[in-house]
Image (cartoon, rainbow, N blue to C red; front, side):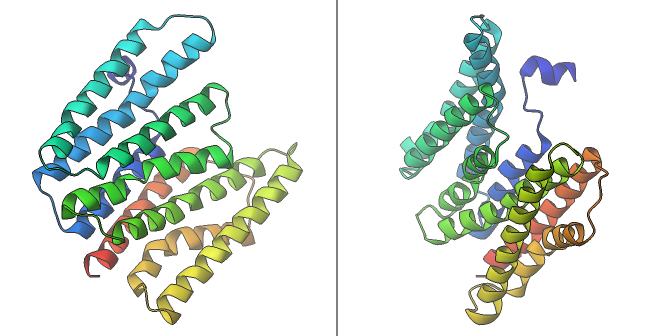
Length: 266
């Protein structure tokens, strides 16, 4: 705990999953574990780790305080990210990583600004965070293949759709235990139900009618669909965030296995 605090490592376990599960999906779909993919893993890891230092530095500035330690770590992590990522552009000539990097930094700064204003826990804020974290899927696929392909965008979209499920589901679970937020709970129930009904219908359409996805894709999403529809049908006011977090991690591993098999064979 002290080491994590001194290194200012991110505390959100779900965010780690949103970073590395899409990365693994992209790498497996590209059928590559070459040195360039490992360099990308290092670079995106250091950028992600830098977020906590950035938050502490920005919060201190907003209060008129100094946070030299956080700023020093921020610069160190960004420098390590640049050192890890530079060979990909200068040596491997993977120039599409430049817009990936610009988009990632922009979303990182915007998310940090929202966090300082305590607006990062809104649906919009969390969806923007998912957009940034799941960029690792197309980036890993691009680096693994060594060339840009449209499948990279499909991988990104699939990962966004999967992790967005947890946003709507967790919002509903949190509002359900607060009796003073009846209107918010009703809105969360409706948006959660609508999202997962559309998600299920879309998957059925792409698997059985268009044939764009295999049954393995259905299996990848099945745990989160079942947990959501079960709760919508039989809601409970009990909330165990640790248990929910562990279950979400296990669902993410199921998603990783089956969606990787889906696109590896495509």
